[in-house]
Image (cartoon, rainbow over all chains, first blue to last red; front, top):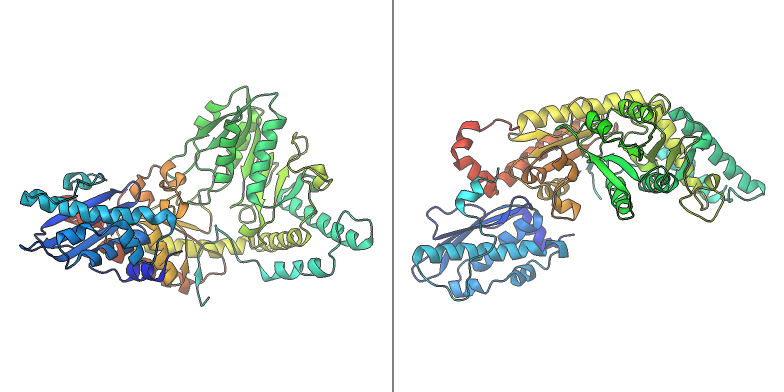
Length: 145
Length: 403
């Protein structure tokens, strides 16, 4: 059902973890539906994403798309990171089963949510960025149980 | 495929070699149509009749009350739709449980779209039907009560005898989907007041695509498939002779070894329940600990999702199943786990392991070790676990099971 690339990123996910004092953190998804992704970004003064980590609760595709998304934005500028779409994530994974396409959308949203958090903290505007709909605020995610 | 540990016997079982062996001559030697007049047909006819007699005896039924079908889902569909049609004059109300198999629930929805009314009775936190609610739901126009004998996901065994008594008391027909129970548990249709019963061959080491519906003499039931005189004119189509023979042989094996097989399965099941319950924190056993199928283990692991657990187990050669949404093809997790009161996020993290008497203790050990390792790995990746550990609550409750 999954491509070799998806299985590889599921079994050996890249960039799992947290970043202390991250420049931006975004958490998207819904525990009810079975997917939650959290992305941590470390962005330097030149606006380059120096490091990116993730934590994901979800299916194989959710883990693999998070992993791939972190790979695609790492080392990139914010503008470049904004171009990492769900399509790009899917292509990099050699495709996803149709029922799993929403996982790649979630990965894109997670990146945007982390960038949104960064922009808010910095008081800057990022071209083309809107507040992701499924963003979960810190307080809310703790109340899921 | 290499070596693997098969722990999904509620999904399907390995066909018993004895059943395969019994079937083979009916493909190539005795391939005649049972309806034919010549002796080649007669030998097939005789074998089918003998199997019908043998299956009937396992339930304390008459052979004329056994109708061979293409499996459990067909039996369920037939029982509900044909009863609905035949008894529409009496009423258009049916009662079932909230945790039935989709073969029942989707058929109920089909009937609801056609003017029938269905009441879904709740279950308690262990999945046992609330009998008082059942009795209260019975109305003058109730024509059928359909409650599964044992649940396919959480293994809970229903109080079938009590349900049968209630149905009889109120003069309502009683059907039970015994797909998970037949040939695993002793069933007597008379003592339990069962009017109809569905069973499936491949759940007890028989071939796939085989099953039967027991229909008590006197129950008015319409034909389901039209076009021939097979199965007393109620289910047309040339008999699946090899399948019926294989089903019969598998049933014979299951009934002659029922006690020792159950005991072996219980030993494996209890070992899994004990070790997983003790060694993995934040888990919950789903279903009743005692009124439970001998082969069923079902746990929820908090903070993780079932599909990723299943894929990881598969990579280690372990076949299992889950009630997570990702494995059901919808956004909602299992209706059974929601019905016993699990929140969505915990229902997503469920794991079902269903053993067979052929599994070994060594396989159980390997499975527990694999589950432990995978749950830990997935939790370390989970933002829910991260939040939990960071929160004060996590500090206080660490290491304890919840619920």
